[in-house]
Image (cartoon, rainbow, N blue to C red):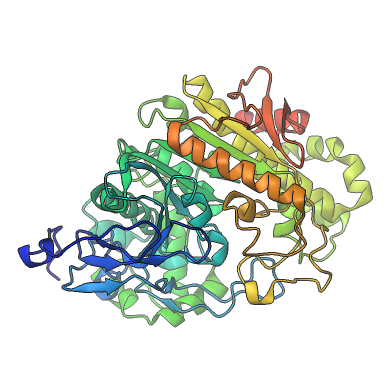
Length: 535
């Protein structure tokens, strides 16, 4: 296939008038063509563009290759619907994270733009959102991620898809051999890099400033923005990072070991052996539904790895080195992350907990068990949730903030402890999960901050109150202020100090917002010591 080149449209397209009228239907030229947006239903003066292709469809011989530029088109396209979600399995409707029956396709590399700019020269800060879902599920188009209310505060919001599961993270010797960079397995991250390229080349037409781009993401998306910050490929393209419940700082999986092994095992589940060109051709001829089925039996097909190209070394080392992306960070986790992630988990015995501790902590298992003896006595399952949370997203957040501050850049670390109502986050038509009106039964659960951050309490969920709305307004202001200046503070907001590893003072995000010593300091100090001793 002839490699597509980035081109500017023909003179015919360039001469077409470009209209940018705040709050009304607008037309904006991109490198690929002209898109017509529409007025937001949720915020006055905001224009929405949905379903913009930022790359060519990664199908046939482009499957498991870096993204190619979007295919140019003539005329004007209506940007009035989100593009298909990337291929993923349908999850259970009993889950907090149910996504329903999505329109799925390999042709899925689309993004959405929300802008309140009045003209293309407004130079508003840009916020690029990468969704969570374990890098195996999710998409950029759910109502909870509608960027209208953030855009109304004076930012351009971009939400994007990226390849998932085996489509986005399959590493394999045959793929590595054909790669110009001698790498494979990071296609989903490369899609995110292509989104950033698209922003650099096109966002000015939407009123955005390509020199003020903040990437933000949650869960897997938080991990991915951590990887992007760690990558030399984003130098000059990213000017701030917000990591919500990230997990990448402790990552150590490598391409040559973990990635290739997982890829060959996955190919074997498809009935394909060998590492030559014939094996690769057979892999690219497998129908997408069959790949999804194999993910249920052989695992996801891989995940982010240290590949030597996108990610040259462990994120812990890259973030601490200060060799690139000397930019501010805002990062944090939630008090009860795994009470949401494992809300469908059956009870476990103490023996089963011991097995988990042995796998997770090796020779340190007995120390962890002694430290959490009271929690274990109450409930081995709840103890596992608490231990996993402390050692996972919460520790990763603090480590990230510590590394950034120690290299001389600003970090703002938070601890979200507000207990939101429990509801299906991504299926507004089936909001009530437990038929209890959204009672606050899971604490500050994983993803519970999303509606607050996007200021979308009026669009999703149930059971909100005035304290929730006030918290949401404050968080939305913090997030946009950070994108604007690298500092979340602003008039009328509770003061948020930069993180000091010596005092371990963080911002507590709850009905009362305050600065305090990290509530999990003792537990995190222990987990950090164990992590560093095991490195």
